[in-house]
Every structure is written in C-alpha cells, then in structure tokens.
Image (cartoon, rainbow, N blue to C red; front, top):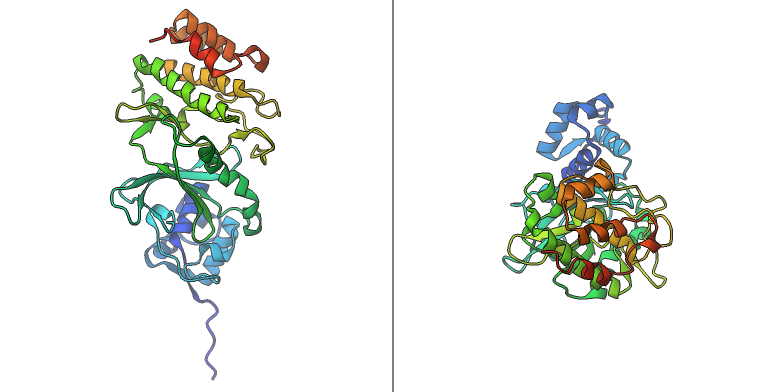
Length: 353
C-alpha cells in the first residue's frame, strides 16, 4: 500500500511580525479562536516554537490581509529573518534597545501606524537614537513606494532647517530590511513628552512661560524656511530631563511651501489642536499659532480644548491679560484674524515669566 502524503506541512513563521499585527488589531488569543483561525494553545505553541501548520498559517495571512512572505521567517525573496526586540526590525546601523520598552502603537493623520522606541547604534557604544517605526505590513507591496513622500517628509524638513536646539535632529531615515516598515531615527533626548506630563498631572505651570517661548522659537525656525508644521500637539513636544529647551519632534505632516508633493490626507481627522483650515489649501504660519494657543491652554489647565469651550478654558488657565488677549487672537476661526507670525506673539508675551 502506497504511503499517503501529508496534507499539511510546518511553516517557519516570523512571530514578531504576527504579534505586531495582532497587537495593532487588538486581538486576544480568544478573538483569533473565535474567528476560526486557531486555538489559543496552538497560538501559544507557535510563539514558543516559531512554526505552525500550513493551513493555520494561511488562515493567519487571510485574517491580517497581508502576503504570505510578510509572515515567513524563510522568505521567498531572500535569507531568513532574525527575531527582533519587541517585534521591531533593525537597520544596518541601528537596532532596537531591548532594555527600554517602546510606546504603544499610534496612528498618524495619514493612517500609517507607528511606534516610538530607543535605538542603539550597532557600532558606537552608548550612542542612542529616538526611533519611529512605521509599520507597512498592512500596505500592499506595490503601493508602498507611493508612500515615500510621507515617509521622507520628516527627513526633508530636518535637512532644510539644519541643527536647531528647539527642533529634532535627524540621524537616519531608511526602510526596514524586509521592506515591511520604515525607520526615522532622531538624536536621543532623555525626557518625556508634554502629553505624558499633562496626563499624569505632573506638569508644573511655573514652567509654562518658558515652554511656550521655546515652542515659538522652534516654529519661528520652521516658518523662516517656509515650512508649516500643521501637527503641533503635546505628543510632539519633548521636555528634556536636564535643563534644556523643549524640542519639537515629528515633522511627517509638515507642509513645504513651494510646490513640494503633498502629504495631506484626503480627509484630515479632526483634533483639538488642529486649526480649522487644515483640510483646505489656506495653510499659513497662522495655522501653527492656532495649535500653539490650544496647546498652551491644555498645559495650563490639563483639559484638552475639546473638553471645554475656549472661554471656560481661558478663565481656568488664570493667565496674564496680555497672554489672554494673544491666545484669543490665535484661536480665531478665521486665519486672517490671527497674528501673522511668531514675532507678534513673542512680543505680546515678552513680559510673561
């Protein structure tokens, strides 16, 4: 009697990529079982041994809507992948520092999902970078090249303005080796975002005047190079642990005046720090001043602008009258009614200490 051929084979899988997709989607092991993909015990076994039966693997590929090659350790188009810390692949120059957990997954206005982590240079000891990893697993391979304007924008802005104490400094901007992600690496700054300080109630309002002046200085440099940030918010403002100026990070959504390819999404999601004209083409430095004023009120009160109307937020902030006046002007729904530039705002708050 002829020996029957096995119906299924074992597939060597990239558990980092699989877990990355699962966590982004918010699926529990039970959710995967409920979808008829595999039992939780089978999933745990896959994580432990790095392989799974071929039919279960195909079910995973279908559930996540990716290509088989995206989840294989032994790829069709090259050599085997190496498992990476936190599921985030390395570059030729930088690797993820596994001693420092990355941020949760976040979504940018253009829909790309990303994670921020500390990175270690592969050749230089104690040389760290702030890595921002854009996950492209959910994007068809033939469409990934169309995202290059979005993925390069941070680097283009950083190169345009050059070194500046108030702005992030680019170290690298490269695709992940397998082509399923993109890395933007800036100089590492020990510190926390303004969002983190506000969220846990540890922000000290006596530092507010200097913070807002630091941010104005960063915006001034960008505007002097015909760049409008468009996405100023507490998450992109980094407060160094040592006594240094606050630093504006994350330029991916910045507008370059002068005909550069747009990175504006078709429908810009609403947000408490975004000026109302963002979805139009009428973006000017006044757009960033709207966000500056909204950020000021958020830091001063702990409330996001969406949690309270402007009048209530301004009253709660207990600001000097000169600051109140300029904040009200910056928050005008009509850009023409706002200050024209950062210098006008800086003069208005010059005595605020």
